[in-house]
Image (tube, rainbow, N blue to C red):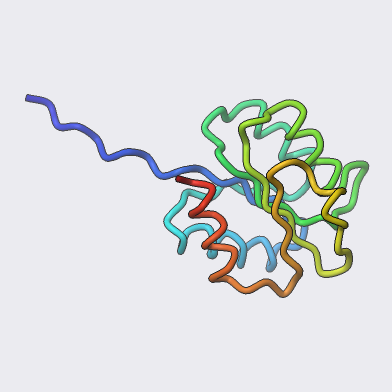
Length: 125
């Protein structure tokens, strides 16, 4: 008889241009029990999403250089990959509730790690 593999943990894409902030976000994801995939920009995140159908949630900063910030990325995800859940963070902006995409959750930096992990676990069930 073959052994059955344990279910894979949900995969979370962390999108953050600041390396230290990205490292801390990946740590939050992994401590919450999930697999982290990293992107340093919204453009890189879209490329990853196009090639990784296993991503369940995107954890993105709003403020990133380049043509697409985290809010535009979130709108793109909601349009192209509607089942993917969204956690949006920023230390500079606080979007109005009506500006967040459907099912999007916002946290201000510095965020409380336990609150973000709780949101990740809610989305994973």
